[in-house]
Structures are given as structure tokens and as C-alpha cells.
Image (cartoon, rainbow, N blue to C red; front, side, top):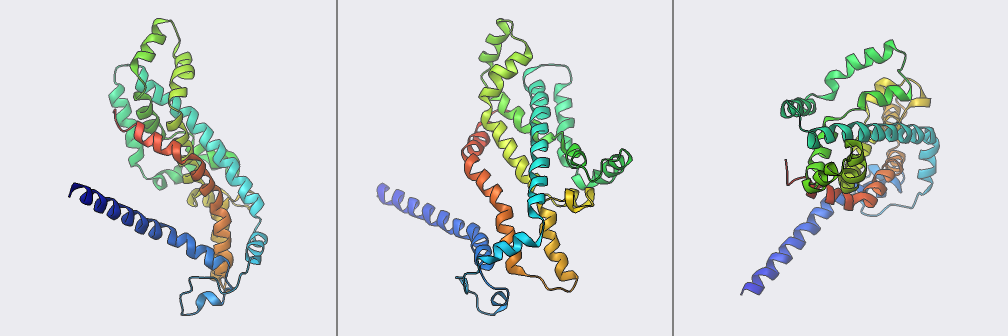
Length: 280
């Protein structure tokens, strides 16, 4: 009786996972179908589960419709700088909160967490005015500087650092190791999962960000991928008609770096999330 209940439970669990997988993958599947179809076939009443013709040239036409090489370069450079800066600043701050006891640490950490409660759009106007005064609008510095620090990054890494056995830190301190030596030789090697998780989440968040790159840049030479995709919508507002099949093709090669990043880093994300949820 117990065996049959376990079997039924496993079957229900697998069916639930399969159903959720279908729901999650359905938008990607229909994006692929739309990208391989003609624009006229997309507006027919019948819902097609298979492309009406294989129009692989849509990807070439979508690529040539915008300077995507420049947009990809700008996205990769600005996001790489943001991720690198946040890893450095968040690591140093998280180490201080987790490993260096000082008066008012809990209050300082609480104030840091309050930073996550403030909507980013609420501070963009003063940030824009400050960057404009020093002539950093429409530059890589203008895209990167507002995101050098991250309250979420500090919180994420602090939780990962707290999971490191205190005995390792105490043994290093007895041997006379400095904080910088402890951070480099003990903390960072034992917190790889948290560091990779922060890097991936940050890259995906800023790679998909549209608002700040749209207002902080004013030339095609500094635009990023989300801005390029928004240009397809501008075609329709200009009365030229929106080529949905080309937009879906552009969406696919725009989202490809993010999918590859998740596939390569998914085991680090799982390890990172499961490791810092124990201690606070």
C-alpha cells in the first residue's frame, strides 16, 4: 500500500513538472515558430504549431535591420564592467558585515538593506543630472557608474560568507593572516557559488534593462540590445507596419547569450541559493 502511494506521488510530481515545463517553454516555442514564419501568416486566424514555411532569412534580415553588432558590443562591455564593479564592492562590504565585528554593524546592515526598498526609477533623475553636469551622458561611464554598488549583492554575498565555517577564519587569524589574506585565500574560494550567482543575476538584470540605457544614451553608437528591440516598435508607431517575424528573430538572437549563461551557470546558482539560506 505504501509502495503504491509513493508511486502515485512520484507520477503526480512528474506530471506537474512536465506541465510547468510546457507552460514555461511555450512562449519560447511560439517565438521560434513566429521567427521562422512569414509576417502575413502570423495574422491568420488559425493557430499554427508549426511554421508555415521555413524562412531562415528572417534572422539575416533582422540582423541587418539594426546595427546589432554595435549594440551587442555595448551591452557586453557595460554589463561586464557593472558585474566586475559589483563583485568588488559587494565582496568588500559583505566581508566587513560578515567577518569584521564592529559597533553598529547590525544597524549599518539594516540601512544597507533599506537600499533595496527604494525603486531605482526614483533616483534616476538626480543621477542623470549629476552625470550630465560632468558630461558622462552617452558614455560607458554613464551606463556603469549608477550601478557600481548593490545592496542586493552585499546581502547575497554576506549570506554566503556566513556559511563558511568560523573555525577556518579563527585558525587563519591565529596564524596572523590579515583580513585581505583571509578574504583572498579562504573566503573567496569557499564562496564561488555565491559569487557566480551574483555575477549571473547581475548580468541578466542589466542585459535586459531598457530604461536607463534609453535615457542615458542619445546615439546609435552607445545604444544597447533592449533599445535596439524597442526600435521595432517605433516602426509601427511611424506607420511603417511592424514586422513581427523579424522582431521575434531579433528576440531570439538577443536572448541567446542569457540562455547560454544560464545553462553554463545553473549548477552554481542552485548551490549558491541553497548555501546561504541557512544562516542569517
